[in-house]
Every structure is written in structure tokens, then in C-alpha cells.
Image (tube, rainbow, N blue to C red; front, side):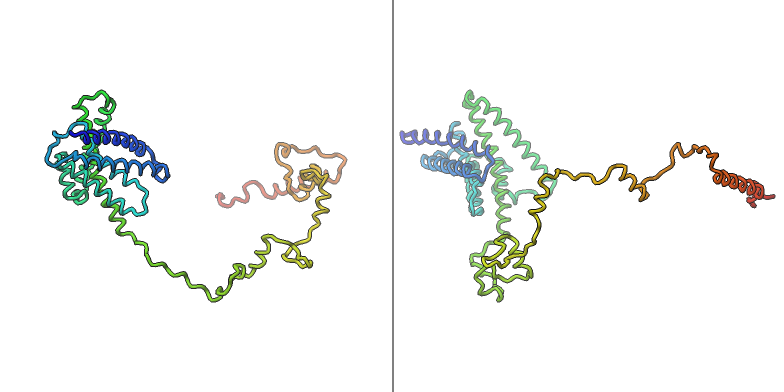
Length: 351
């Protein structure tokens, strides 16, 4: 390798490592709309593009060589296009369609490079050649089983990458190569999923109504509102518009003493003066006994009942009129019982 190629390789390694750390920070952040997030995103895209330019400059990957010809430390540079595609989708750009098409091109470039080095499985290669969406089976059960299988494979790859990444500084060349190949396999699955998502989103955008470039004419104004420059003179169907507007505030009287808005005269000065030494609460106007007496007069109190209702008061011996009335009542009751013996009114039980 020439001296310039060694310098480019060293520069590529330093830029790639620095940008990878920045990419991890971006992936762990969820504040997509903030300026700081977008600044980091643009910086990462610029750095990865520099890596891509250096890779093309030194012709790091070639279609005339196989995977065994690529060193273990350089395999990871195959992921540059994938990282560019992933980060491009996070851009907060006005033209979403342009972002999607650029990411689709980067995904396809990454998958083409993987296909050159025989890193695509038979299923992945078929999906890449036919299109991520068109290759999906029509049968829901088959599609569901494929998704389950992809999920399990993705889970196993993530576990393998996590296990190897824990001791990344103590790995030998074989383990380093296995780590990078596992990352590429996981990225292939994500790239195919990204292509499917881009296809669906582009389809939605194509159906959305496009904004018209021709400016719309302003709505026609009512003939009654033409010629009015003062907003207060604008037309309104409210009859009390002037009264309502005058109640909002402003002087009560004009300089000549003419009332400008309706008002009511109140003896507020006298009422305030009378209430200076008044207590803060309402004082009672009658006693409890007076209140109960008023309630008794209105029939609001029920008297009688209880245990005392069964107690017969002792007769007053000096009250002859009451004693005679009680005697006559008892005599009439005895005469009634003699004239109407018990059971005489029951005609149904007579023999």
C-alpha cells in the first residue's frame, strides 16, 4: 500500500470512529425537532460522506475480489452507505419525497455491495432483486410466519453483537470479523425493512394533494363593507354593537358633560360609610325560642307521639264539664255495644 493510501486509511479510521460515536448519540436521542439534534445529524452525515469519498478514492472495495480478500478491520466500512441512509431518514426537511428517494438509493447501494461479496442470503437476495414489497407473500399466514422468523433472527444477531461488543478490546481477529459480519447481517435486514417503509411512504405521498403554485385570489368582499377603512365602521348585524363596545371602558362623560356610555347612580358612598364598623358576618334577627314559636304557628313542628302518647293524664276533679262529657261518652259507647252485639254485622258466617 502506498504512503498516501496509508494516510487515507488512517484518516478514514479516525473519521469513522468519531462519526460512529456521534451516530450512537443521535440514535439514543429522541428530540428530533430540536436544532441541536439536527446539527448533530448534519455533522454525522457530512462525516460519513467524507468516509464514503475516501473509500471511493482508495478503491477499498472491488467487484474483482471476494470477502476473504477484505481485512477484518475494513469490513465495517461497508456499512457507510447504510448509516447514511438511516441518518438521512431522520432529517427534518421540507421535501420529504427527496429525502426518501435519497435514502432508497443509499439502501440499494449498500445491498448491492453486500451482494457483490455474497453476503445476502437466498431470501434476502430475492427480496432485493424483486423489491422488498413485491416479494412479500400474499397469504397472511405465510407473511406472519416470515415476520416471526425475521424477528427471531434479528434477536439472535443483536444478542451476538452485544456479547461480542462487551469485550471488543480483547477480541482476536476472528472475533472481530464475526462481530462486523453480524453487524452487516443485521443491517441487511434493516435495509430491506427500510426499503419497504420507503415504498409505502412514497405511495402515500403520491396520493396526497399537491399544493398549488398559483396563488388563490382573495375572497370577494361584500358591497356593504367596501369603502370602509375604519374597522369600527365595518358592517355587523348586531343591533347593540355600539352599546357593547362602549361597555368595555373609556370615559363616562365627555368634556361637555354629555354621557358617553350608560351608567347607574348608586349610593355607594353612604353604604360604604355605614358598613365601616359593621361585623363581617350577618347577625341573627330573632332568638331560638322566637324561631321555634314561628315554626309552631306555621305547623312546622309535629307534637305528640312517642312514649308519652300512651300515658293517660289524670282527670281534673274540679272540672265538672269535662267529667260529665267523659261520662256521657262512656254511656253512649255502652249503649252502642248493647244495640250491636259482637258479630252481628258479619252476615257471611251466619248459618
